[in-house]
Image 1 (tube, helix red, strand yellow):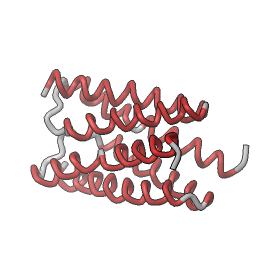
Image 2 (cartoon, each protein chain N blue to C red; image 1 turned 90 degrees about the vertical axis):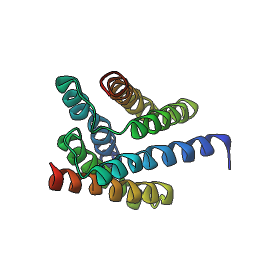
Image 3 (cartoon, chains in turn blue, green; image 1 turned 180 degrees about the horizontal axis):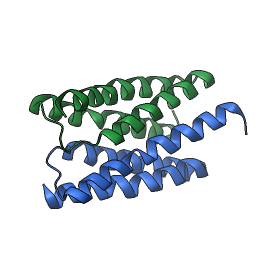
Image 4 (cartoon, helix red, strand yellow; image 1 turned 30 degrees about the horizontal axis):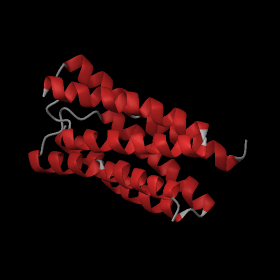
Length: 84
Length: 84
């Protein structure tokens, strides 16, 4: 793997896993008042577009990273809708 | 522009602009207790890696999208550190 590819994988790993602390915090507190509903509606839509993009290119890294991001951001969106 | 490219641009636009509502909400409320510090530390690091990746590839869409994401996510991180 080239140096550039490894930077790309690290970047994908970080921006995908970044949602985990927010999902955990919101789940643990059962409160989401500081979380923006607008952000997660737009983020989920954007991640779905990345997923379609990855599927059309057949690019596994984009597909995998965005499947995980979709699960996490949709989870946070659901908790925002439930806990307000 | 091909259909696939336009999906990619829409995806980049959405996942970049998604931070705007969270930045605006946190700035307006001057409170950030529901926002995860861990998320934005990891997100800023990941976006910096995407920026390096884009610069090394000379890929303007990746550079521009991640410059904007860096400004927005760093702004939210700064407000989280200031307002707790």
